[in-house]
Image 1 (cartoon, one colour):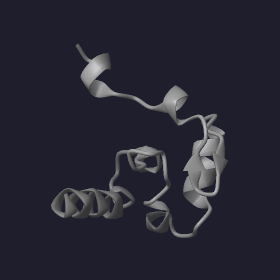
Image 2 (spheres, helix red, strand yellow):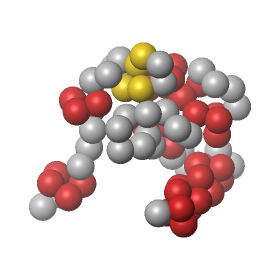
Image 3 (cartoon, helix red, strand yellow):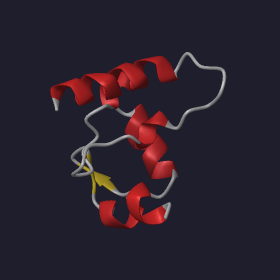
Image 4 (tube, helix red, strand yellow):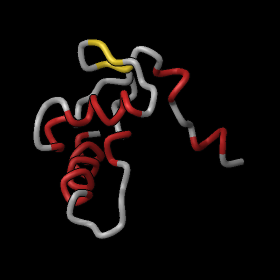
Amino acid sequence: TSGSARMVGWALNISHSRERYIPAHRVVNRNGMLTGKHHFGNSTTMKQLLENEGAIIENDRIINFKEKFWDPSTDLR
């Protein structure tokens, strides 16, 4: 929903001002698109951070998304 998207945007904005590190660069949309890249100062920071973790990105989309995706509903049972 649009309300959920606004909440995620709010969380991304404040993540940079926290003492404790929050890996907010890992927050992508359900299709693996880097829709939050504008929250990282420039358009390439999010991509670089994800690539450093092994993500393959083309046209602002994680190509190996199924391999990298974490689904807490299945992993935290």
